[in-house]
Image 1 (cartoon, rainbow, N blue to C red):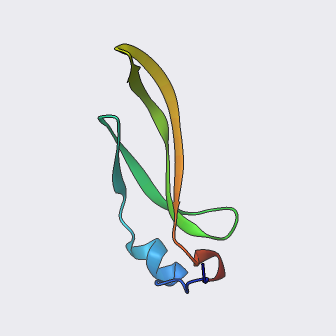
Image 2 (image 1 turned 180 degrees about the horizontal axis):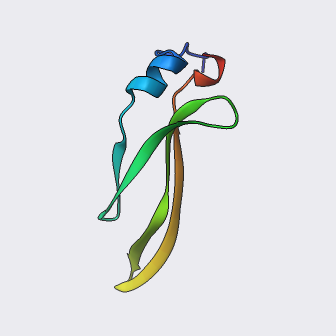
Length: 74
């Protein structure tokens, strides 16, 4: 896949980006805007949720990055 240019400047993203709500198996979580140590930027989420396997509750740790494509070079 061809590399796409970043659709927003780093400064604009860091000033304007709003938190994003994420649903993990019914648990509402919020990903917050941030710049990552790699130089790219996007949203970051960490927390805990409970999933169900055959009716048994399973506690899980949730961690995710939503990285803006092309942001490392922005």
